[in-house]
Image 1 (cartoon, rainbow, N blue to C red):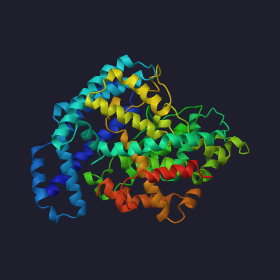
Image 2: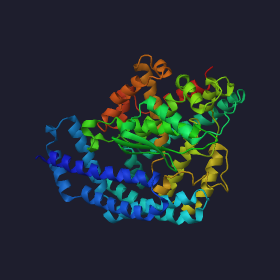
Image 3: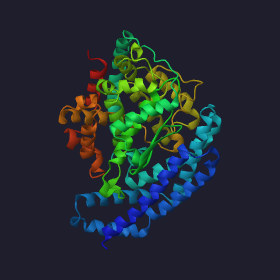
Image 4: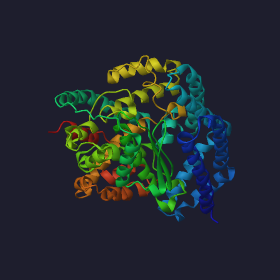
Length: 499
């Protein structure tokens, strides 16, 4: 067995352990009874320690050195796989086992506390858990940064999107920060002239689920290799051949749950479309968090909030809720207006695509300050309120549930993840604009409920490539240029201001 073959065998075993970890994480969020939390946190931290021991075995370092010395004998996929193995090993060995175990335990404990405390707005109970978790994430950032020659926040950001740096994020966000306020005012003024007709509920959860299942099945979600459940925070988890998506329901409004399902389906279809031949190797993983978000936002925002999609979906939505098809409130145009309504609000996951980047900019600014130590956890509520007033004209003073306690990310230790949402939106706009150029009749296919041309294009250009190339190379190969805000801005102008 060559050194490279030995590495493939080792990483195959690691992937099987990670499979177990992924399903346990889904179960903890979607199925586990509340009383199981402490025991599950202990079990998951033990598993994290076992994985770390396997990832940092001294023989792996030796095998990597030997395999890299004979890389010329490998094909392109194998060389890319070896590069990803090397990256995994570098990052794993930068962190001591005790820190990995402690971080996993702290993250799960803090997240479970957040779930109990958010409805009660009990900041005082969750705050010390978050302070402890943040101290561990700072230490991890410092150690990773020392190993990679990066600042702590740069290192954390790099774990979610390889090669992504805060200065690039800041440049894109600065451009959007200049564009969005004026654009938002234009859109709001235009919408004032076209008031919505309300959609009268209630909307029973079983009907919401049935409508969602019909639409995500039409998009291409494979229920033979996936399932849909409920969680506190919508997410996509599991593994490619056992993909788990979740949503959450409100009986007074069906759109948040439906759009959540369509969003997570974009994630799931990326996961289900990863290269089968490399399913248990690092090169077969998704490219990164921003690219993953691009796939969810391409489906939700670019496709499923379009006029073409509503031409297909409107009848199915009306039938699903058993409404009077002659009611003008349930017309295609009024449903489209609800799907594309722009309104500054408190909740990021319910935000429209115009104001959504402002929610992300807020979190990007604050989490950098948290990691650097310039912002204390105790000061998050006031800092959040100040940013919300500045960016969205809303105050969250005395409303922590809809303010700094609304997202799971920090309470789960996911510092550095938030920027990937808006970078994903930019990537989605850039990719979809190219797909419309390259796939003849794409809009008409969507209008007819035929999504295979789009999915096939994504499978060929994105999903099936795994980690064969980095995100910048992917965009250049597909669209002809690096990530830009221009396609996103052009998309917004066409959707919200065109006659």
